[in-house]
Image (cartoon, rainbow, N blue to C red; front, side):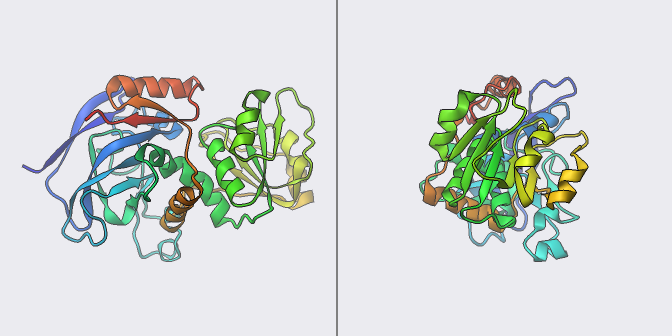
Amino acid sequence: MGIDFNVFKGSEDGKIVKGSAHRDKLNGDECLVQTTHSGVCGTDEHYRHKSMTLGHEFAGVVKTIGPNVTTLKVGDNVGYGYLHDSCGHCQECLTGRETFCPGRVVYGYGDLDQGSFSSHSIRREAFLFKIPAGVKNEDAAPLMCGGATVFNVLDMYNVRPMDRVGIIGVGGLGHLAIQFASKMGCEVVVFSGTQSKRAEALRLGAKEFYATNGATELKPEKLIDHLLVTTSAQPDWALYLPVMAPSGVIYPLSVSQGDLKVPYMPLIANGLRIQGSLIAPRAIHNRMLEFAAFHGIKPIIQQFPLTVDGITEAMQTLNDGKIRYRGVLVAQN
């Protein structure tokens, strides 16, 4: 007996393979959740050559609850993201920064038999997020990582209304960052390679837009207080540091294995700061979902079936840079 469900895994040669997972029973505050939708994130590509269940932008429905579940009910729409668990008693956990817990369990490092590319998952109630009424599951899924990543910067690091927020890139992260920052009352300044996304960026809430390909100098109306780097490659720092306001903060948000190389003296002379940031801890994650529901913020999505072929196509489309702007896998029940 026990609980069996289908999963989609990476493999040594990078092909997506269908497999299965088994758990004997639900323990403690664990819930069995059924996948309705899964976002496709660039981080998933990093584990494509590893024999593990892929996916960490989950949206679905609670099917069964464990003996110690207290708030969620069967039938609730819920999501989960990058963080699976934490110790609950260290300084970081006790101050609401459990994403930095030394004992954290995160995607790619624990629970490798489970992920959102699956028919079901088992997750602790404490790390599931109830999806607000009015937010569809297909829109909620990309918010579980992409939305939480950009919102965390704006919330945790005290970005204020009327701050000048620069966003490099109009993609999976960037198009969400534009919406969140704009609805927070910030002056949003977007930098993108060409003019092709200008109209869309302005529609999403940007006040200014600058194409950067071939540029030797940027001339925004005023200097930038906070700069979110959402592109997969590092920008030309010599182009951006001169447009930062004194004491401005730069947030590199995409995952890269290379070194971060930034001109030294502009940081010193202008008191600039480079701030690392991960996905949102749970309190901020819940605020993000409530904020998105209240303001009608949702990702622009491209849907694919949650099958071997659908996952393969979605990840190839993402690698080709042709997703506009978040891929979403739809369960074929």
